[in-house]
Image (cartoon, rainbow, N blue to C red; front, side, top):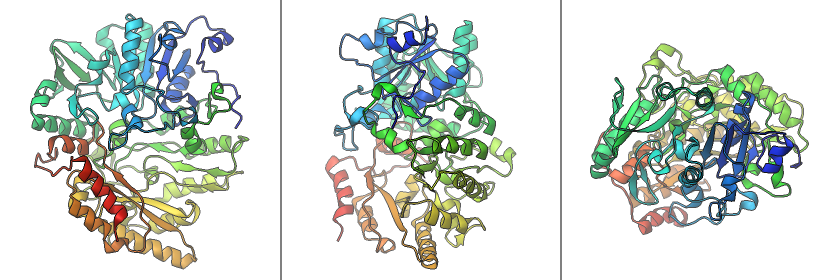
Length: 575
């Protein structure tokens, strides 16, 4: 790896001087090492603002324990400070499902742990406000995005208010941030008045007094939610419903002597807009400051290609739709192929694309056949409890895209390392259309390295209902078709299922039935994850309240650490 390749996003005073800058517009603080790759949000925002004429510097993994020199070294920016925890929530990054401290950090050079604080967004923002009280601070990324309103915090086992309250940030940008961050940057530069800035889509802010905005969705206050778990469940149901609508209302939630306002998001990005987000001069390398050091997370994604954003699967334990949106936003085939050509030309590339996809790989290009029905839809999932009849599930587009990628000179393999939803091409009777079997065959024989990983998550329909996942019968059908393709082609591709233990609604007996389900006979199973409640998911609300926010009916929740461990261990100890 040639880590000495130039990156014109500075991270130090020396690099700023080398560029001849006498000011910096935006200084971005991140809990990750700085990798100039489109898989990292810090790089995406830095490059996007740079494209529009702004001078952006990044301070990666600042030391918050010493005299705060990392927070002082570049001085104050002309416009604002931006803060994110990195590609992961800092608490998920630090702790296991059992709340044990992890001993490594994939987003830090050499995997070294302890290079960012717990609740990094809050810690960094408070320091910046202490040092530069007059300079605006804009927070974003996964950690801020999923904490934009009252949320359950698993690590302190309590409800917390919007991260705007504890951090003291001026603005919060949620979701995928290119468009709101650019608009906010222009507004701050132009000195727009507060009333104008408060109308920018996809931002949130904290204000004193009572909200006077007409037509807003007013939630129960933070204080009410803290006293009444049912009120919190009701709030979340409204938040989630609006997060999955094309035209949601502004959301207002009272807290203390003020309120948090969350403006509706931008519409889903067009193909042209998506292409523009990737048509940027990424070096696709760690910053030269890390020469000779390994960043494990970079090793995992350096040869990957992102094809789209969003997920309409609606799994209750997942935060993808809450952050990226439900509606699929796809890049053009031309944009993807152009990136593949650039990747193939890099001296470090050895012919294997490690992952060609997105959160759900086979949703590329999928949309509603009648857009007018999507305009008014309030469904959280296009697949659960049954696939939407308006959803175009053809895999012809994704197969065509795969073929064009494989035709690029220098590409030997393009693996699909992202998740695949088999209910997009199968039902319990078989393939839903003529593109289903060709897709599964292509996936098995051309786009895996011998093991196809899928996520049925459980075998018991009761538990799957709480997860918003399809019946296990569909996995059994997948296995039938999978085995048939192996027989027809004389291949030995393996099917590897993933499962979750101790999810709300799951008892020890449910895990016993999973471990001994005859539909799993002959499959090597070692992929089980203990459920971890994370902010802004239905499952975490169930865990905290003991209620299903969709129905407000009671749900069994296993909270005892030893019994949670027993559920997971049963999976490995099965006879």
